[in-house]
Image (tube, rainbow, N blue to C red; front, side, top):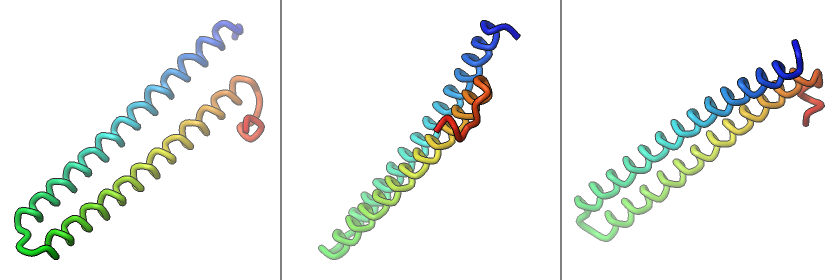
Amino acid sequence: MNPVQQGLDFLTEFGNLSRESTNRWLEQQRAVTNAVVAVHRARFAALQNAKQLEDWAAAERACVTALNEQALDGLKANIELALDHFSRLARLYGHRTGATAGAAR
């Protein structure tokens, strides 16, 4: 295979990898956004039923706790996606250059 064709194949595979990773990232962001909206809806429902200051404080604590969990879950998912993307990119690059994935790091 000539170098031009190899370059075109690499760019095609790189584009496919980037598109797939971007789609996965957007799906993760959609899921996190939907979870945050659900947390706020539950918070507002709890606040509407609050009869005392303790009820209000409990609703706020529950909301903050849930939001922190969502943020942490979203961050972990983004880190996993980035690690997967870059490991696949390293394999793709190593495959094209004849280098190993470990040498690319």
